Length: 274
Image 1 (cartoon, rainbow, N blue to C red):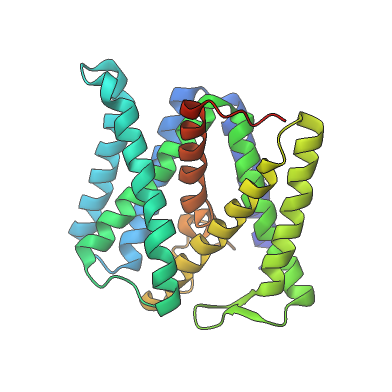
Image 2: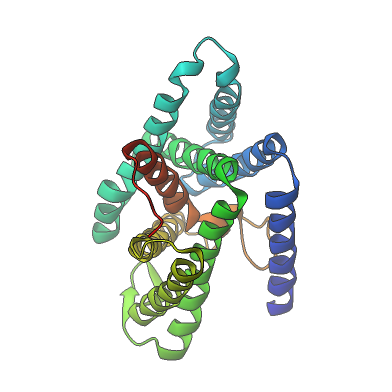
C-alpha cells in the first residue's frame, strides 16, 4: 500500500511540475477543467445524486468553464472581472461563514440541489483560481500549492509523532492539534525564507497562516461529507490516495481565496514587497 501511494505521489508531482511550467495557458486551462469535472462527479457521488443529476452537475460546470474561457472574445468581455470576482467571493463566503458552522455542528445541508450547486460553485472557483494564478505567474501558483502540501505533510508527521489532542474526533479522528501546530511552524519557516530571499513583507507569513487554517477546514469538510456518505475515499482514481477530492480538498478553499486577495490588493495598490 505504501509503495503504491509513493509511486502515485511521484507521478502526480512529476505531472504537476510538467503541466505548470511547460504547457501553454490554454492547455493548462483545458487540462485543469477536465480534472475539475472529475472532482464534480466525485462530489455528486458523495452527496448521493442520481446518475442523471450527476451528469447535469458535470455539464453545468463544463459550461461555466467554457463560458469563462470564451468570455474575453465576446461583447461581454468587460463584465469578466465582475463575473470572476463574484465566483471567487461566493466560494470565500462559504468557507468563512458556512463551513465553520457545519463543522461545529457536524452537520451538512440536507438539500441535494443546494449541495450540488455548492459543489459546482466551489470547484468552478477552484478551477478559475488555478487558471488565474497560473496566468499571473506559474511560480505563484506553485508557491501556493507548496504551502498547502507542506502544511499537509507537516501536520501528518507532527501528528504521528506528537499527536495527543484530537482536533475533530467525530469528523476526522486522525487529525490532532499538534499536527496543526506542526503545519503552522513549517509554513512559518517556509514563509520567512520567502520573505528574506525575495524581499516580501512579513505580512506574507500571516497570510500563509490563513492558508493553513482554511486548508485544514477544507480537509475537514470533505471528511465530514465522506462520513455522512459512509465512504472512506471520494473515489478510486488515484491508487493509494483515493479520489481527486481527497487530493485537492485543501486547495478548494485556499486557491480561490488567494486569487481573490491578490485581485483586491492589486485594485487597492497594496505592495507585498517590504
